[in-house]
Length: 301
Image 1: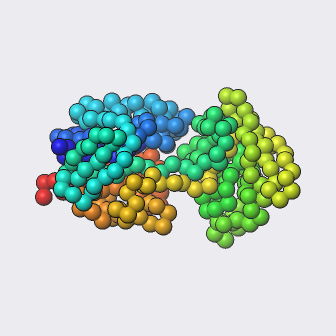
Image 2: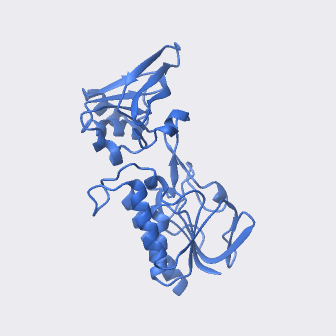
Image 3: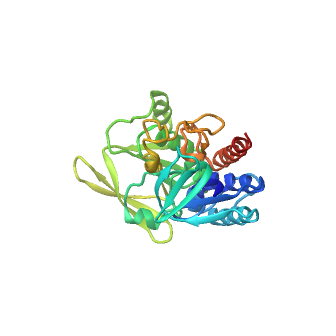
């Protein structure tokens, strides 16, 4: 029997584990892939307080070392089923069942990808899913943003602080972003729109060097010289196994309050899996700390 089981080993889950372990609660973190979440796949992080610059994998390793100092157990596997309304709550990973008094859901959200093999190859090497995280690396360079919603257009405008040229590649001939965001982008001389187009291939060996763009109406293809590509076609919350159990919004994000409580007593949610306005490394960690502190209060009550 565990006091706390944390599902997800990204920044939110690791921070929750740190606080829970320091509170002398018997804690287990269950991660299905690799610790660190999206932070671990980021080539370099410059907006984490205390470090002028640190590689994502290095930061993740430091977080893991710190968590393990407090005897927090970490295991790996895919969640096959959960019973969050029972007492104790039950989490099944493969053929193994765990029991716990409290669950913290910190599965995160993963960026929706274009779906190219070259995208995977160059991820973190010029292919990015976070303009605010990586934009400063492209000072004076030429980049492209893929997408036409608010995030894409906000990213394009933000990137003009650094990049010399920003292309916006959108598969339609009009944007889905708000009128205010569109107006700012259309007035920005550094932004050029490529309409009715998709990215067919990302070129480059060690780093992004360009992309092949295809017009979906004419079939015409052309190659752009680029130093970076920012994919902003949405995120996908990793909440499939809690659908019908935990209250979710229309996009699948977990609904909860500022204390990280969900609709089920003893079940908390932290990080990018939550419905929230800002998804950054530091906000995920803040969520994890709040969830763990409130988990401890829940147990003491």
